[in-house]
Image 1 (tube, rainbow, N blue to C red):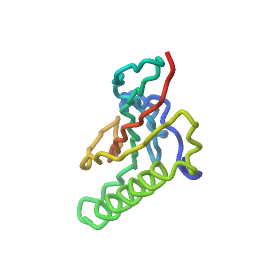
Image 2: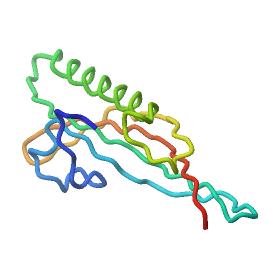
Image 3: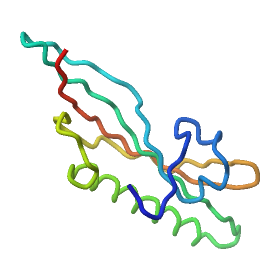
Length: 134
């Protein structure tokens, strides 16, 4: 998804990753699954709630708030890039069984402290409808 970012091995629990992984990284999570009605031909749509987590190390310099502002701006620019890529199916290699991808929301900045390091993260949510034959 990003050539310059590292994929988070355990995006469901950011604290359980090695600290060097979270410096500038992304992870993909499947949050829940909802199955639609089944028609006569045994076709159905399954909606997966997928999210992308982005993290950045926050190097703290207590007297300089511009570092925080710069990191927040960068992570939200990355979130916008993720959103554009997911909504343009050609850029993420979407299989033909995907009927629709929507965008629902992006979280506010979350702070994460791991050992002596500080990180910020955001999560971008997409419902993805997949057509299946049962």
